[in-house]
Amino acid sequence: MTFESIIGQDRPIRFLTQTLQKRSVPHALLFTGIDGIGKRKTAVAFGMALNCLSPVGVSACGACISCQKMISGSHPDMITVNPEGAFIKINQVRTVARELRFAPLEGNQRFVIINDAQAMNLEASNAILKILEEPPRHTILILTASQTTDLLPTIVSRCQQIGFRPIPYEKVAEALMDLRGLNRKTATTVAVSTQGSLGKALSVDVEAWSLWRSGLLDQISSLSTTSVQPVFAFAESLSRDKGKLADALDLLMTWYRDVLLYKVSPGRIVNKDLMNKIQQVSKGQSISELLGKVEAVNATQTAISRNSNPRLALEVMLIRLCSDDQPSVP
Ligand SMILES: [Zn+2]
Image 1 (cartoon, rainbow, N blue to C red):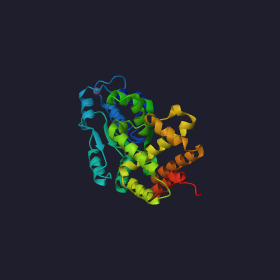
Image 2 (cartoon, rainbow, N blue to C red):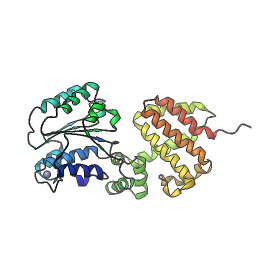
Image 3 (cartoon, rainbow, N blue to C red):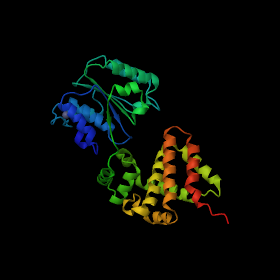
């Protein structure tokens, strides 16, 4: 888990290695970006680099006892806090605060990594704020979160923020070919569908995912505004499966984008394995209809990210997606 093993995050790593070279490591860092793009791995690699017993330049060796303990999560100076259930609670932060009263046990620097810091409830956030206001010596805090707006502004302002971007699709696809033995076509489809999240892409069971994708697309194409009951039933079932909802919307976005691209730039289609179906659907729809559908999915993603009622947002979206299928009135 050295810097070299992290894929597609050259900018954050360049910044971190510069702070190591200049010996000006901030006492608090905030890593932002979607899940599965290497924020946690980078935090551990940074901790390893600072405490490595035989560093190579400013990078960790990955082999010494300190590195090995950090990789296995057993280093006493690397404290990791994860949400317990939906939240990071005050007791978890109090336990950390108690440990911070003492000097690091084995390393030069102690690391506190707070994963998914947006899960901190208000009490926990205030307790972290207190630590940030009076940073203990030899201690570096790293918070990870999807975006700064999920955190108290007072926390954000006390951290050096480092933005992690989604990993370029080609790099995710290459990793899938290397690590999962997928062919390029399937690897690229999975990489794009998981939006540049390597963690998500690696966790995909390709066979189950292909079935889920074709099931979802079949259901969408079978809907029609002539019979709204199935539309509402489908909206309800989609909204109930909260774990899959974001994935379903991402899939619909790439699907309608592909159907649109078929008309203007077919080489850029993502779901290349569904070319026949894309061709068939694309023929029956105009560019402006398809732009309206892409916009409908996008509006739903935005509404749900702003805590709108998912079922209602999905009902509106599905009606917009199938409205052109309505037979013209004689
Ligand atoms: Zn080492």
